[in-house]
Image: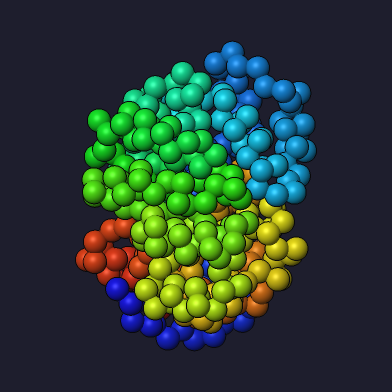
Length: 350
Ligand code: HPA
Ligand code: ZN
């Protein structure tokens, strides 16, 4: 689906933040474990009697000074260790979904990392039950359409991924797709060729992190070997003109996460982010929060800071929101309904 372009009147830069907040949008790249705020980490640690190596919320927040992806992942996995019970997973997801609703996120496709929990003895059922219950409540109480995508950890083996898939299959109606996350460098997509082929046969949607820190070659193999429908991050693609052409021609969405890229030093500052270059090349680029509790902001913060730093316009705002609906895993009628809401919000704003 190539969404018909809605021509947007220019608005003064000082009114852009209000427009960015008001516009309905979809979030396609957010790790639910990365929405765990330090306050909730401490509350759950206390509730569950789990020891964490930080003296206070402030002490933990001070540790959020990352130099690359791995420096973040080490702290992210430590934070997730407080999650034990179904209610913990519910509380974490509910806190995120309330913030998503406040940001006018009307559709969210949330990643979860079951291996982070099952390897600590938490059952797959506990994880999925808690997250799923929050998704059901989000639709009923917040009007947010929420779905789950199971991610395999790429620093673990393909055999481990297959075992995880087996454990999750009894709950297959509760997640819409599979993804690939964790340490990218040294763990190319082809390591997971067979498990993705199996997930494809099973009818799951397929996505993978590629080209966050890793080279364009990883984006090519996510497309050609894993056969993903979306690429998570993908910002290194601008280094390869043939890849840019492929992504534009096949309308492969890139789920870009500007504040994540800033905090993990993928770009030296937001003003040098390549989001505009991706949009200008006709790619289906989107804005997402990745791990909002760790990277300094949820959806609207990502939009507002990135627009302020790069000079993107109201037309770009419309395009990014339209791209988020085009890239979402809903049927064509639902996409059209989302875009109608988007166009109505822009008309009302003007
Ligand atoms: N990249 C890879 N793995 C992750 C990320 C990310 O940005 N966030 C959580 N797991
Ligand atoms: Zn991510």
